[in-house]
Image 1 (tube, one colour):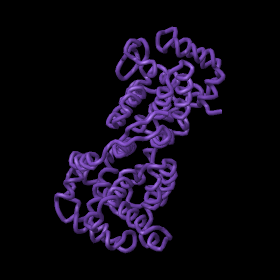
Image 2 (tube, one colour; image 1 turned 180 degrees about the vertical axis):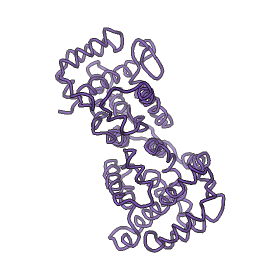
Image 3 (spheres, helix red, strand yellow; image 1 turned 30 degrees about the vertical axis):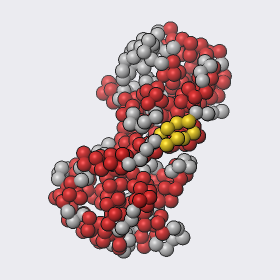
Image 4 (tube, helix red, strand yellow; image 1 turned 135 degrees about the vertical axis):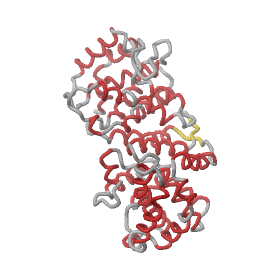
Length: 408
């Protein structure tokens, strides 16, 4: 089993970039919340690991949100169903041993202090969760001034008053006091602008190094990415898992080394992460896409590359994932690469993606049986779209490919 050298903070940062796509207009929400939480923590005298744990939980606090409509509801100051995504986020982080310690903070990051303070939880969890809740609401209140008026300084006193009104009820009094102190300056609010907050997070990234991970550890992180994108639509649920299983299986049939087969599985899990930018309604449309809608869909594989390319150690996996809509004759997207340039592994992911998508129900059709899928793959192969060697392996092991694609 191969060892991978990955910077966990880079992976978290990229996951935050993926979550940003869900927000559509509320870009960099997680990064702004992390910045404000860290500033309040420093004012409270917290240091070292505690601030870092808070920062990580803050940047991932909305990992339970995949749907644009949910993100829009959370942009309201108060919403009766706001705790649903906290439960989902907790479950997701619990599935990853390296991020599991953050899960209780994410679970309670929308719980009022008047309720939270009496719960049987570690004090650090209570404080961290409530700190994130407070600055999360600050950022929601900031949205109108960032987007509509493009001048956050115009709204700072209104925002400070709204937070002060909830002191002792929604938010811990000491945390509110710390926020009032750090938010007194113009610099605090100006630092929330996209370029400034990204620079702040870059400093955080520079303070950590790559660390060795085995395949199981890396896979548990990668599956968070795939779960978030697959949860965006009922029609794509488990798609990434199916592509990952089938791509790895095809790699073994083609006698690729074990580490390449592992990487194929990871590429399959990650290939559609760029779809988080797509509106929910577009992924669930039952009619034929318009030219404008199809052009919007075409950007998702490039968005996959944009999200993942900053994670050192995942460069090859990122390339295979981002090229899953390339075609052997150069007619694919987004790079129009041909067989002489496309790696065998990228061609495997492309075949696995087509097969699994055809095997699943979609809003515009029912799932297709194996024989019909094989007929389509053969037609695409004959037209020079899909790799002959890979498609022949599917043809020779059709029943098992069907089982791998659907997990049956």
